[in-house]
Image (cartoon, rainbow, N blue to C red; front, side):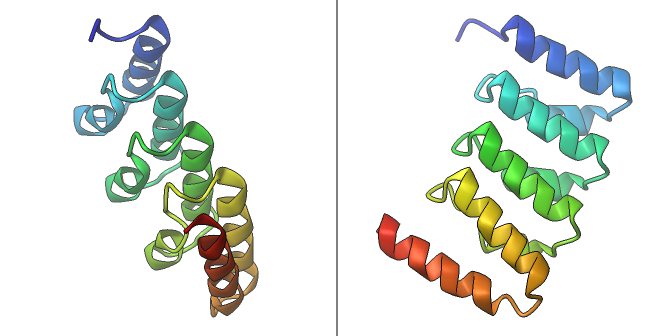
Length: 124
C-alpha cells in the first residue's frame, strides 16, 4: 500500500495528542482501517473503553457505523457477552442498533435473541 492517507494520519495524531498509549494507538494505526473506522476506535479509547473492548470491534470487516453500534453498547453499560450477541459483520448497523436497544431494555436478552434469530433467517 501507499502509506496512510492524510485523514488516517490525522486520527493517529489525535490519539497521541489526547494522551493515548502507544499500545492503544497501535490498535487502530493500521492502513487496513479507513479514517472513519479509526475515528470509532479512537472514540472508544477517549470514552474510557478498555483495550480489550476496543479490540472487540477493531476488525476491518466492520464499517464505521457498525463499529459505532458496538462501541455504544459498551458505553451504555452492556456486558461483553451482551455486546457479542450483535457483533457480527453480517448484521448491518441498524440491526445492531435494534439489538443493542433491546438488550438495554430487556436484561434477560430474550427479546434480543428472538430478533437476532429473525435477522439470521433473513441473512442465511
